[in-house]
Image (cartoon, rainbow, N blue to C red):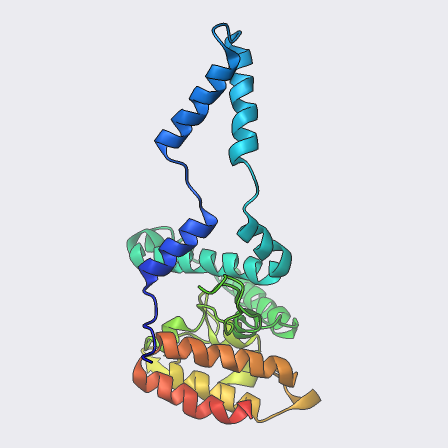
Length: 274
């Protein structure tokens, strides 16, 4: 028996809208209003009384909670919450990509140094800020945050779990680069680790005075960090969470990455799933 083809995005969207966004037609709404008016008779009362009668009827008929959405909230609250955050991230990234001129226009120009004393003060303040930031413990990186929780939605009943996923590596999967610490996505924000723990493993691409890192640097960082397990591991020390994160990364790479990059991620990460 031939295997059925996977549904298209448009078919999945149509089924989700049918299950989660039930609609009423103009004809059905007109019929409901007519029924209420017939029940009120030839002297239905004031406008306020008619409005109240219509409101009671429509609330009882159409304001029932959506059972599918209630199931998602009840059984998959964390995944649904995470998914909504992912959507916000993707919308922000889409806006940044499609409105580069507007983003650049809001950048503030750096004020010129008025004196040598001010230059010394700025340099000292900058060093102090960097030291405070360097010593501050970092929270789990975006890779662990986005790929550490299972994602809820699928076509089959909307409750079957899919491998965890997130958009933080999409730029890398598409052949892009990141900085060490600047921007929404950087090596430090992806791994949640300090520059010192990452720079030695990450081969950089120099463009003028700036350094950039592509998928090869990300994989070098991953491989170097994954070699350490248990308490000595600086990244993904818990083996169960490690498998969850790596499974999600490989799943997203298969969906988003260029073939060459997807193969590199598979070759590098697959041994650490065993």
